Length: 402
Image: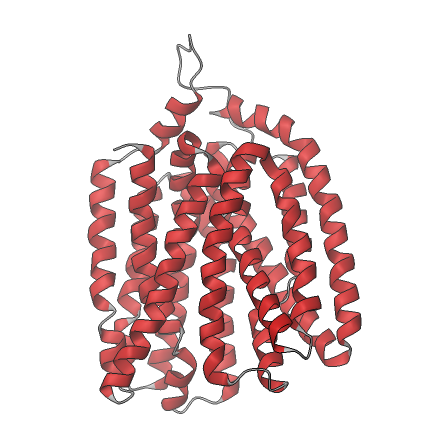
């Protein structure tokens, strides 16, 4: 199987997995409420789930590098996710449902560093940006289909959660079947990278011992990512503004979110292709978009507010595709899963800080919010310039450790 076919089939796996867990997440709040949960319980449970999905990667990433069991961790993580979702609809007891919600997020933490490492090997042959962009675009298709499917079944079944979430067992089973077939066809995806980076006359596949620490350029890049993410408005704050200012009814918010996810996919593809042509300089558009979001979205007119939400979608697409591609270019293969775990931890902490910061400033002063976010993104641009300066040295380290 060629590297592009591997990426596309892995994209199908992610599409189907998003079908499952995004479908469930679209109704997690009302489902828990139907079992007697208060708004506080819903907030704590969903917050704990997101913390687990990101924070536990600090463990699963190094574990993947030490054991080299990338396929095993990927399959185990996906299995935990797809097996946790269908029982949610028939849980019947609040604590059981809460445990299943958190278990689904733990599954994402288990698989993500290993999965990203497997993909990074194939993208070495196709182009990092393009490979991760195609995967992200396919991922977002599932994020659209899942919630719409659940909404349709709920409408047909009279708001019965059992059938709505039970139907997700079908794409869940397909996820596991495809994963086992992919592992059988491509047991060693690292061969893609070895072939892509082999030089004429090479007689030994192994280079010098890999560095014990992550490269300095990775930490500079992680700092850039942390800063730009900490100044990034969350969709929760955007949707709150739209409804509270009577710019949009609650029923239309999911439609706008779906439109933002479509923009997400397009932005991922566009910047992924540009990344392979121009390198990290294309990431300069991310702080610019992040600074534009509050300036547009927090107005009192519908059109600019909707435009702000769509710009938010474009920025999210870059965050979830091209940012991951750069990690693979900065870190040698033997340490890459660790890097992805650390990177996810950094993004998780920055996301929490960004949500708290923008939420607090929104309640105090929107002009101050716009000013602060713009200043933060200016700092991010400086850090990106430093990262670009260090990338050449990091690239030599990566090639030497392959």
